[in-house]
Length: 400
Image (tube, helix red, strand yellow):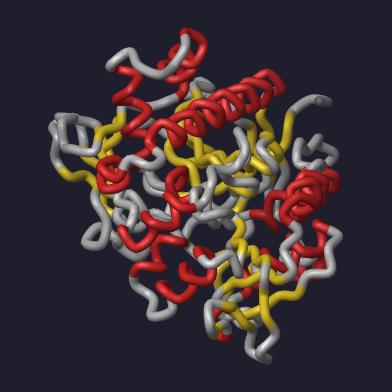
């Protein structure tokens, strides 16, 4: 079967030299140990498909933002969305951010079929990675290959977002050791233009409601590449929330991003759609076209997916076939299904791409930066796109 996507180019004869060039740009994990994470080819999509992807992303962003505002403050919904109750008081205490800005750093993941049909799989509205791949590596690789990249404005959008948020510190786990997370926050700081310092979450501590770094310097405004659902399990979670509740710490993305992050929010939006509530006709058309039937109970009988409301990197994903029988379960990612409720979603097929490294399924990401569709991320994997998938740059076939 032909596909709307076209794989271009061949792997360069001197991969080591190419990897070194990418490292100089800040993409230091093109090779991970002995594994080739980056695939040295490109995927080209038609300009009309890219334009529709932008349109779909903007529409779904408004729809999910509207859904958050509907469920906010309703504890029965927080429970259905799997949001740890340790966060409920903070969510009730803090005002909702402006429309479209609940998260200023997010990424949609779409299944785009061989025929170009676009379906939303999930939204990472809290701590998406892949930023360096999309904002740094993709434009350079596309330019090298003579193909247009739609990602050139990503740095400017980060700068716009952080000119409002103005974090003074940017944190991740194991800073300086974990290549991807460290490289991600370093790129964000570099693109923001701010004089923000990078810190390790493991060195942070709270004293009298004030967050401090490893040297005891207070932090008042911080961006953290740290999933908020883990506040319920980490020893310092309650103390960090106390710092936020006390007004001593402003965290980015803000606490309400966890509502957007929950995969259960799609079930809430789909349920409201089925009941004919909340959404206008234009929004209903976008939901029907771009969203998948999604529920918080196992009502689907065949061709569906179950996954944790806060699973990441494919962890907890299980695929069921046309007979309703388990076809495939992720074995690589961390399974959070015992910690959070499950969501059940109709399956959507990912386009097949044939590369020099073999045949893969293509997952298409769209970053939402400062509330705007801002850059495409390509990931090549199997039926489940997990933490063993590859990065492959995506460009547009003709001039934008």
